[in-house]
Length: 463
Image (tube, rainbow, N blue to C red; front, side, top):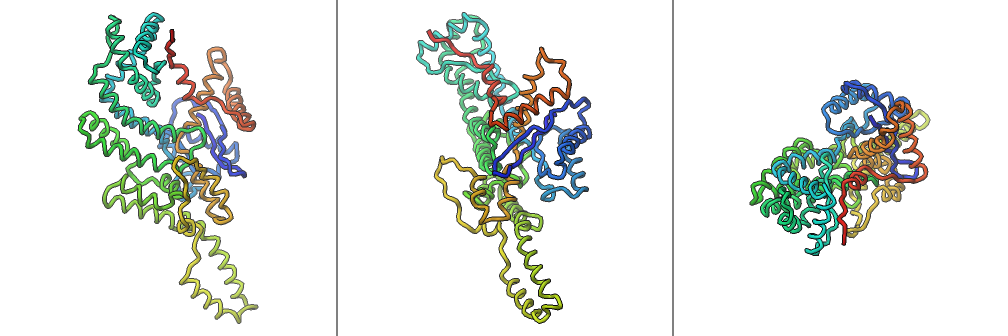
C-alpha cells in the first residue's frame, strides 16, 4: 500500500511526497487498511492535518473510508464537515465507464489486437507488412499493442490501426494465414467508437496529468462527457446507443449526485466563478434536479460550515471584541452608541471574502492560454486574505490516484527477479528515499504510462 501526501508549501507550490510503501498482508479488509494507513499518519505526525483522502473504487476502500471518517469525526478533526473527505479516483471511474461501453465492440477490438500480435510474431511478417505500408504511402510507421488494464492504451491502438486500415486489407490478400482482418463495417464501427472515446481520452489525460492537475479542471471535463453521452443516446447507430447507455449507468452511479469537489474547484477558478455552475449544471442534470443542485452548491458555500462562513468569522470576531470593550464599566457611557452602531451594521453586514470574490468580475483569459490558478490566488492573497488560504485546500485535492500508481511502477523496478528477497523496510526506504531526493533536486522520473507505451510499440522498418 502506497500513501502519498499532497500539499502546498510556503511558496504556493503544489507538492507530493511518498510517505510509506508498505507490505499489506492478506486479508485486505477495511480494518487492516485503516490500521496501516493511520499508523503512517501517526509516524509522520499528520493525523490531525488530513483534509481529504483519494482512493480507487474498490469496495474495501469504501468501507475503510467510512471507518476513517467516523474516527476523524469523533476526534473533531473532520474538516468541512467531512463533505470532501472521501474522493473517488476519477481516472478509475472513466476506466470503468469505457470498459463497460466498449463491450459491444469487444470482438472487433480483439481482431485488431490479434492483428498486431500476428504481424509482430515474426520478422518476415513485419517486413511484408511494412512493404504494404510503403506501397500505399501511409505516413504511420508503427503499430501499438494495448495494455488491457489501461483503456486509453486501447484507444491508442485503435486510432493507430484506423490509419492503417487500407494496409490491413492489402496485407490480408498477401498473407494466407492472416484471418483476423476486420471488415469494412467493423472498421466503420471502430471509427465511430473512437470519435466518442476521444473525449474520454482527453479527460483522462487532464485528470491523470503528472503536473499536478488542480480541482478547477474537473467540472468542464465531466460536463463534456455528459454531453457526449446525451448525444450518443439519440444516435442513429444502435451500437453507439447501447455503448453510451452502459457508460451512462456508470456515470450516474458515481457522478449522478451533486459533487461538491468539482463544484467548489470550478467556482474557485477566477475565470468561471459561480457562473460556471449556472452554465454547466443544466447540461449535467435535468429539470428541477439542476436547480436543486445549483442551490445546494450555493448553500454549501454560504452556510455556517462553508467557505463563506469560514471567511467571515474573522471579521465578525473582531467586531465582537470591540463591542465587549465598549460594554465594560470603564466605557459604559458609550453603551447607547455601540447599540446604535450595531443596528446600523446589522442592516449592512460585512461581506465575506467569498462574496467579494464572487461579485468581482471574471478574470479574462484568451482561449488556449495557459492559466495557473494557484499563481493567481497567490498574487491576490492580499485582496482575499482569508479565502486565499482556504481555496488552495480545495484546489490541490488529488482527483486521481495516479501518483500512488506511479509509485507501484517504481516498486516493480526495485523488486525484480534479481532483488526479490529485499526486506520490507529496505524496499520502503528505497522507494521513499528516491521520491524525496528527486523532489528535492527537481528531478522527474518516467511515469508509468510512458513506460508501458514504450514497451508495446512496434516500429515498422523503412526500406
